[in-house]
Length: 111
Image (tube, rainbow, N blue to C red):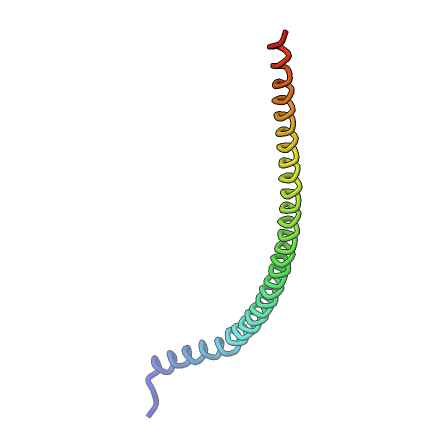
């Protein structure tokens, strides 16, 4: 049984559109999908490289920080020793002044 002319023509248009989509659009979509996959791989590689560099940078910073911390502790010890030395000298000066004042007082009393 033949189809009416209007329906046969619309089927032909639908088939034509399908054919155009299959001939032109589908290959383009596949090409875009391949390009997206390639971009995703590149992004993964870049992310991996950045992650490695960040790990190396963090490791270097930690090593340098530990070295600075050790240097600061060493210098702090030196400064504390110098402060103790100055305190000891001041104590000696105070004792000397006290002894001199005690010697001066008996002379002042006898005069």
